Image (cartoon, rainbow, N blue to C red; front, top):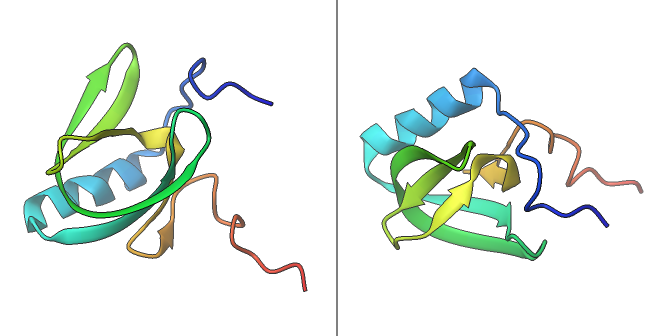
Length: 91
């Protein structure tokens, strides 16, 4: 199993801009993401800031939690880069 702590995968600028838009809106948004131990988590919070730490980019939530951008699966129901097919049905 891949260790999510090791390598940061840079995110497309368009997604970063979308996150900046949520910062300016100052409203609660739903976010699904993977924790550092690969737990699927969901939160509804205000995105307060974007920041870089140890060469990885994060969003800061009003809860005080930081989420690495390459671990975000969806924001407001829209898939993050790399997770477009994550919820696709194989029916």
